[in-house]
Amino acid sequence: MPKMSEKSIERLILYRRLLLDLQPNHRKDHIYSHELAKMTSFTPAQIRRDIMAIGYSGSPVHGYDLKLLLHSISEFIDAPEKQEIAIVGLGHLGRALLNYFHGRNPNLEIAVVFDSDPKKINRVIHGVQCYNTSVLEQIIQQKRICVGIIAVPVEQAQDIAERLVRSGIKAILNFAPVRLQLPPEIYIENSDMILAVEKAAFFARKSINEERFNE
Amino acid sequence: MPKMSEKSIERLILYRRLLLDLQPNHRKDHIYSHELAKMTSFTPAQIRRDIMAIGYSGSPVHGYDLKLLLHSISEFIDAPEKQEIAIVGLGHLGRALLNYFHGRNPNLEIAVVFDSDPKKINRVIHGVQCYNTSVLEQIIQQKRICVGIIAVPVEQAQDIAERLVRSGIKAILNFAPVRLQLPPEIYIENSDMILAVEKAAFFARKSINEERFNE
DNA sequence: ATCTGTGAACTCGTTCACAGCT
DNA sequence: AGCTGTGAACGAGTTCACAGAT
Image 1 (cartoon, protein in one colour):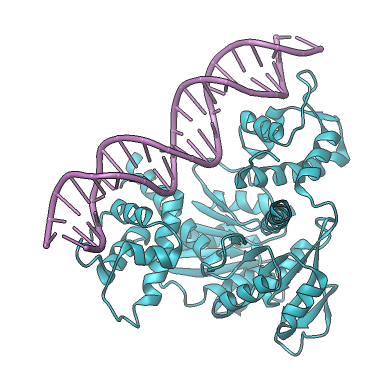
Image 2 (spheres, each protein chain N blue to C red):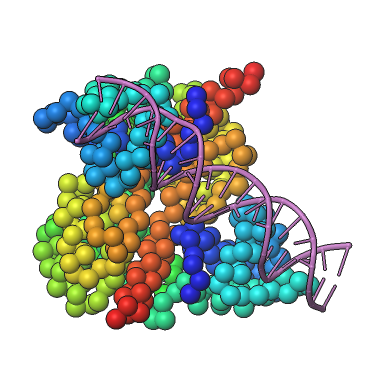
């Protein structure tokens, strides 16, 4: 496996999504790096580098074979067998995740959700079994789930994260607005909505200031 | 204004959040860069650089004055007057945003939400007025809102984004799993949950592989 | 003695520019 | 002629390491 940055992985996931959307109406069965570039607003050189990195080669005449490229990316990104995922916290955010994810990626499956609301526990919601958060460790170990999504209020996030790690989880997607303190071998992806809003507001202001300045 | 990377802005927002949480139980009124480092898991040098960049100086003896540092960061990040924000799409995700945001940052306010569901239109939800998406342009122009949050299904995202831009919005926080095509002066922050899950799954697998390799 | 502030070095990711292929 | 693959240059962001302050 070549060294691969987090950003390359992100782009590869986006290429794959794009190619999948493209395939049905296949006017062509090949695509050039500059075409992918236009669609993604990355640069052609970057796209060639990413594709090179996963070991696929195109033809200087036709560009990249759509099907083969798609296959190479999927082989690189996906695990050999389906990966199971757990969501902790079934508030609005947890439900939004279930909705968004539904039928999206056949190689990933939201296998269980946890919540502490008796109205939700032991029911099937959106096709997924909901358990009491108190049995989190057992279920996750039993099912060998390796990815956990934290969608609980901020006060509970660190505790839940530690319990997930103790249960054998290797990667956490954290939606709570805290920086989790976990052992370095655990992959943490933060999706901090409040931070994102504050950042957007900052750059909106900056853009307004610069406009004024250029008048 | 010195040149500032997007990442520095993110960190500054996190420092501020941390300092705000810290203030009530002020055992001390000063803090060293290495203390902030431990709490954020950034490096002390980076923290000093960020603080230097906004023009605040600490004392080599006591470190940074909590109150003054907080004030300097806020002055740098916040607009002089309150900024108003619009959310488009009041599904689970939109509601989650309203919840998360409630009472979080007094300088930012979710001023309006838009949806096309008659059950929501013209009602006040979570303390925020909901309008029909059809009047988006009027309301946003009228209120001079400069930040928009896209929480609609992926098929509508590009159209809504263009309408937001036409209404004068300067920054967009996009939760739909597409790359929006917009003029370059518009700041776009993507928060692509599906991508985030796929990425986490990839790194979970990688971590498992590396473990096996080290045995 | 122990901190901050910061020039310099370094690391990592991106882009350039061109050789090589067809 | 027009593409891919890629060494080399570049640039942004981070860390080092130490001068300066007290």
